[in-house]
Image 1 (tube, rainbow over the protein chains, first blue to last red):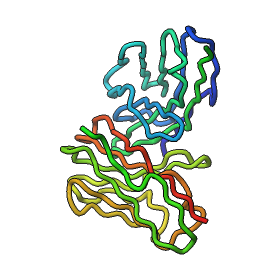
Image 2 (tube, each protein chain N blue to C red; image 1 turned 60 degrees about the horizontal axis):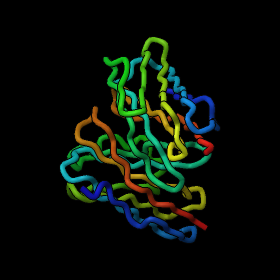
Image 3 (tube, rainbow over the protein chains, first blue to last red; image 1 turned 45 degrees about the horizontal axis):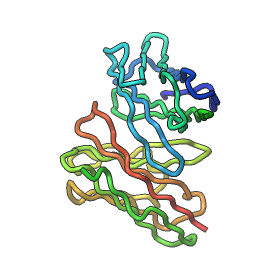
Image 4 (spheres, one colour; image 1 turned 45 degrees about the vertical axis):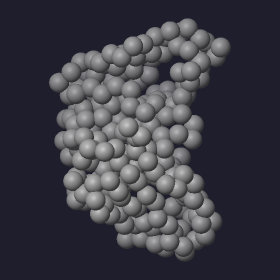
Length: 111
Length: 113
């Protein structure tokens, strides 16, 4: 069974600092990996999707890397802003096409 | 596009009552997923459909839970009878193809007293 771990569980940084969020998974035979953002009381918003054959994906200030062999992905958010405050979830899709989610990292960006 | 639509947004019911949650996926998407989110267990996949056909319901916790998708634009998740431990946020998501991004609805917050 795929286990997805996100460390740290919570992170607080001053505005302008770069954010580094970590995700690890136990089974490297993944189909793809997706990073989501969840605001309090809201649904999930997909940020980036990395296929198993890719090493990274970028969108604006966001960059996600994938190292399948070591079972790790990292989400980088450059020049953080208070609006980046949210919970970030990592989800791994296996060959059976099911998504397994991490517990998330709750980010607070202080103005 | 309006995105994935779920109703109701909030539901409070008494133990033993039947609860029906509704979902309208994004038009053209052929996969629909039901998830449950709790503090203790995080996000869990309950069931998913492809072209209105249930593919995997191994995440459905008990026989009290059932899901249907009578057509491409509508799905229901029913709990009968409901119990306090069913209290959670239930999300519906849809995607075009298995390998594509999943788009989530706003969720239904269910409280069973």
